[in-house]
View (cartoon, rainbow over the protein chains, first blue to last red):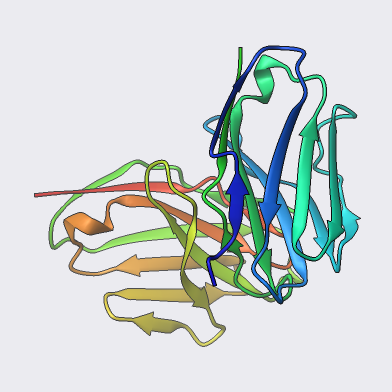
Length: 113
Length: 106
């Protein structure tokens, strides 16, 4: 298995633009997580899915952020409109269960100018 | 969501030293704990699980103290390659600690 796949690896955009981050979890994993990592706040859980259903989105900063999982092999995190404070590394992770090891993708480094 | 607190360091130690990190958690019902390692500009990767009875993997020892609600990671005979950030995780709450940065120097 190739592991968790994320794209793009780097994204530079201007304030106000829409940004879409993509994730392909490990096949067979029922849970998918989206995290954001910054120096100031560390690694924060934004949202997680179980069997494609969003379970907890309480970490999503505000309405500008949305996430979907249309099927077991694909998820997106969208920011519209983007702001400079959204600049961070966004990680996607997947696991068999919440109490199991999570496998992280390489992350998307987002810079909003 | 419950809190997980971790000393951010940095810890700067010489090669061969023994170093220990602690991580406290607030949810007394938590059952599942891990230590992850994150190298600079890389994703976190599992270092080891933390079992109730404590567990060891080579130079690494993880322990859980339920009464005081903390987990610990001990690294013996530290190597230059151990330099990284170590993150504790309370998996039930999906909460990561802020990470402890370790630098091992020659």
